[in-house]
Length: 590
Image (tube, rainbow, N blue to C red; front, side, top):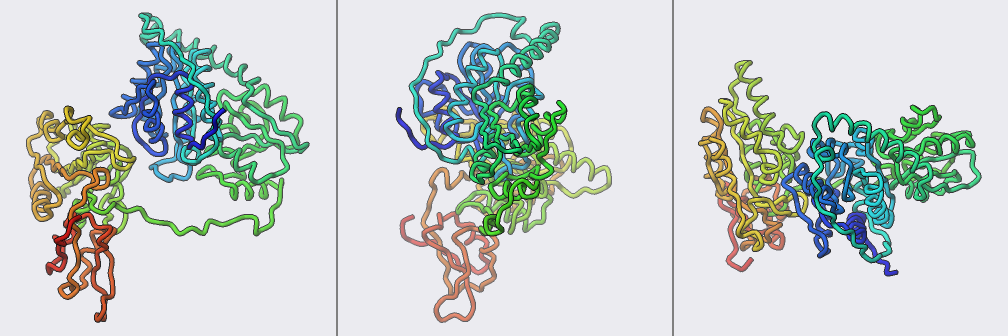
């Protein structure tokens, strides 16, 4: 058998292909973005980005209903968007194998909250698989699709950021075709209205009881004995980190963490003086054991938030009095934190610079432009969820208006988020009558997750040139008339458009049209600083563009601005904010 090095995300795609998977869909969100990207390398799989997670879920549901092995992937908060169809689909007797792959984010490396997706298994009455290596990821995908069809259930495969991006050796297998049986009309199976949905509740109950019995003898649950009086129950990356610690404890590694193999654990745990649970993030397993009168401890020693690293495990085992480590064996993270920043030439930069200058009250949203929260801009005052800026802006404006405060409110939203979940918010705003200015930052891509296409991408990618959607035409169709389209690299014009819009009564919309410089490789002749003209006022520094810094030029006694020509992409914003014209475009090629 051939062996290759793969990430956890790539292993998902490989497992789906080997299992005869056919329909795959997703919405881009870290840490699961590259699952669908790598899925596209397999000709036998139809892989498509959904407009949002709900649509992606529905594509995969449709594939399953038609008898095709189907998969949908998303980050943890994406399930919130997809839960409406999903929570009903779980009642249906699944036909084609269905796998929901979710990437949790312990430690919040790229997310606004830290959900534990294992709880969806209990909530939705479906099994949850929790792998710990890329090899297990591939194996569990294959096994999950088999379980799905055997028990007529969707299966949730829970990954974490660390597992999604880590690399490991994966043994490759051949593809085993899974014939697509086709859609068969059966209203009692697929139409979830009473009384069909009522009977489905009993089907789910019976299904979970069968799955629990199955898990009591599931071969992928493993017990490692070291003749210890302590049993540690764990799964996922926690298991790998525990093995690195090499603590002299017996380990029960669970593959299926819901429904738990309660009968097996009860019998096993009676042989131990102490049972510990190590899990990310919440006490899901621990709580379920206690509900079933199995004495176990976990979150007393291990944190409920963040990653369960090797050092965290060492500290927890020491606190539990199970194992001791020398002080020098517990390493401290000494890495210097790096604040994220917008790329050189990012079209969001002039918008933020303007909003800060005019001291606008800005309701923010999710995307690259979330960085507007951070220094030096600090313009976004809220950051909740995708599309939330529009409804929140209306709520803030209404509350202020009722208290006599007429200060205008600004909301920002990107094109990806606009199509994901912003259009309904615009419809609500259309008739609000409040003084709200919405800035749609249409950079023609889902930039934050790697440059996936949006409906406005069209002219930048040849394969989409015949399909392009205009943001301002969509907004016009909602009956909104006050719309201004700007090129934000024309700084003064854009500033005037925003300030004028904020002064007008009612809803106004600014559509900023510059594309993502990084994704579309946009580069113009670079700018440079005439150090003899520069007064060192740092106006250009305040744009927070990576190529710009302060430098002590030869013969000078104080620092002046400097632009790294290798980093500059020639966006011109710095030259437009310079009060003395010291920043000039070079005459050479980009």
